[in-house]
Amino acid sequence: MKCRARIILAVLLSSGLWLALKPTIQKRRITFLPVEWSQYLDRMDFWFNLIAFALLAAAAWLAFSPERRLWRALAWIIGSITVGNVLVEIAQTHIPGRAMDLADVVAGFFGAVIGCVGGLWVQLRCGRNESAGSPQVLFVDQTGRLGGAELMLLDLAIARAADSEVLLYQDGEFREALEQDGVKVQVLPLSGSTAAVDKQAGWLRVLQVVPELVQSVLQTALLARRFDVVYANTAKALIIGGPAAFLAGRKLVFHLHDIISAGHFSAMNRLALVFCANQFAHAVIANSEATKAAVHDAGGHVENVVVVPNGFKLTENRSTDAEQAALRANLGLPADAWIVLMAGRLTPWKGQHVLLEALRDVPDAHAILLGDALFTAEDREYAAQLRETAAQPALTGRVHLTGFRKDTQAFFDLADVIVHASVIAEPFGRVIVEGMLAGKPVIATRAGGAAEIITHEETGLLVTPGSAAELAAALRRLSDHPALASRLAAKARQTACDTYGLEAVRAKIEHVILSCASPTETHAPSTLQPVEVSP
Ligand code: UDP
Image (cartoon, rainbow, N blue to C red):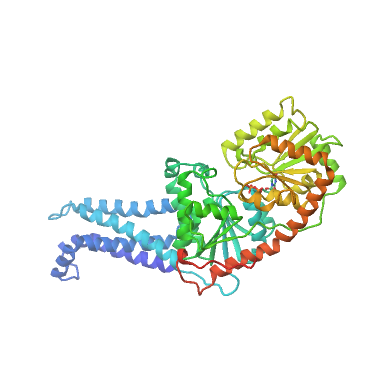
């Protein structure tokens, strides 16, 4: 494509030069065109110029196939054509009988714009390879950090590493973890200001980053040509990957790990998410019934939403006594401390502050806050506040903030109880299942996905979101009644093994991918039949 485009570009450039010099040559009567033909061409000047320069710009676009700096390429091509045109027009003023014709410059400018868009369109639509075997999937995720959504994607991408690639909009430990397990990764980093647009961003904030978002959409679309399915794993991945999949003519699966509600997203972000899901997604995988219900409440189509929970490796592996002793010593935990573990990123809605409040009423308990402020400045401020609170006299020495750790298993093994304290509905809550699988009693808040995972008094205890008093009472209950704690933990482990095994979950997700990639499927996203997934 590039070679052919370069030849066309060379031909166009030389004919363009000839056209530019045409009047001069004509004066000397060495043109081979009959005079009446030249006059005819002169009358068609505007349209002739527009078409000629559109072809020139399209050839230039294809010859250089810009895939990274799209705006810069656009500016170069359109700018050079326009400047070239102006210079030719100025030169013409020196030829007797000819004057400057601004219409030619305007025609050249619009021709260049049309040509670049045409070139981009050809670039997007050509060279698509329909794969015969397993569908080729481009997983898209916005962050380089390891949140719950990324840990789920890590397992998916590793399992289909031979037929997939991951595209990230930020570099970080997520890329390292993927590459370590043989997954191909591309990073198209967003600038700091675009990356900082968070879930609560308003119109003005988003408008400022539209040019970069457009560039990311085009770059993602160019990359998506090599794949059968684009799999957007996060909200920002959908905003960029949705239009990109559409432009590249690829199927889009959206894995929804968030609750689309006012508590989690600004009005503008809710609107944009629902629009992209409705318009571009051929299937939406919601991680809980609560997440699916929120799609409906936000105005999304639920016909193509299928609920698939997160999956986890079922293993009997536990950390050794020596590892746990080392961890205890490292954190400065007394040998007989009753340990409460709260794992997850530090962010106000996760409710770490509620646990610290509850801890004042459970004087013998120690709390480990496993995790870090991963995404926003507000999270980092919150983490600093937590550290201040932890230093207060009632809590001194009893709260242990560890930062983000990859070796989470030892922490779960060390704990006597796992707490999940989100103050608003949790979309899913991986840490709850991880606690259950570790064979520990879990206390969670009664909302969203957490309330679907835990059955109160059977597989754990549920408390009212934001209620430190109820949380403290539940903690005291478990600390005072070890038999109750053991009963809940045993039932919880069995339930978690039966419901959240990684292989079963992966099979369901693969089914969704296969249904989308099926070449027989030709209807528009909004009219799709629900994807059937075996329970
Ligand atoms: N996690 C981790 N290291 C940490 C803290 C948390 O690997 O230091 C993991 C935790 O084990 C869980 C995930 O991060 O698998 C958090 O997922 P969850 O669904 O609870 O919350 P999310 O971040 O998706 O809102």
